[in-house]
Image (cartoon, rainbow, N blue to C red; front, side, top):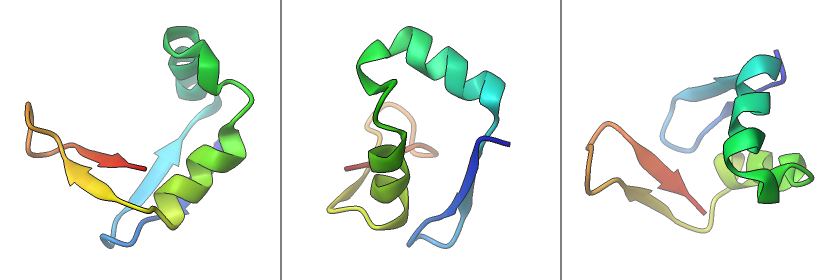
Length: 60
């Protein structure tokens, strides 16, 4: 397990090492920002629901 973060919405986001590697392959700009990703999930400035799929949220 790479990390496990509780969100303010009451669910937990779990990310494995393999999934993190796939994410940074697709989005190399976040490779060194793991701490900020975790912070955005646990204490976001904003949470928006995806306009394409209501099951997905954007944490910023």
